[in-house]
Amino acid sequence: MAYDERSTQVPAQHNLILEGRERLSVSGVSDVSGYDETTIFLSTARGDLTIKGEELHIERLSLDTGELNVRGRISELIYEEPAVTAGFWARLFR
Image 1 (cartoon, rainbow, N blue to C red):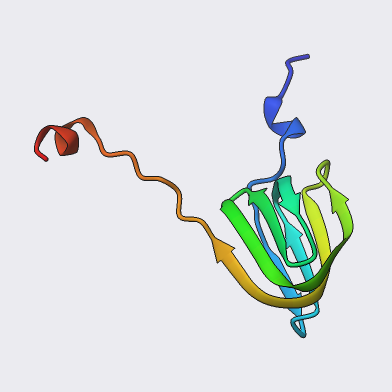
Image 2 (image 1 turned 180 degrees about the vertical axis):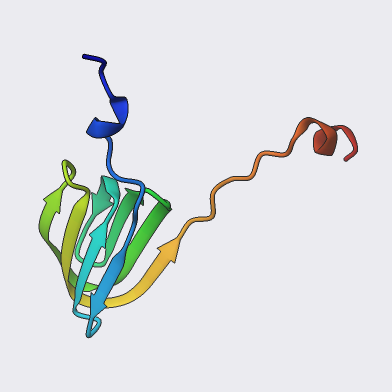
């Protein structure tokens, strides 16, 4: 039986559910790189995401299923734009 590498990765689907700016559910999470009571930094299937607010608490994190639940006063959700690498012709004609 062949090894299917896709079966062990976090699904490419990424969803956010924000309830009353107090509860946030995120799917497609591959890593949480840091957090405190005001900021949570995470990587998702659609790019890096920063969650800002007050009294933030991670209620549940499962990297196996790619799910994260946060409770607190959520004020910002910020996606970092992926770096665009220019092709050969774009670099040549700068």
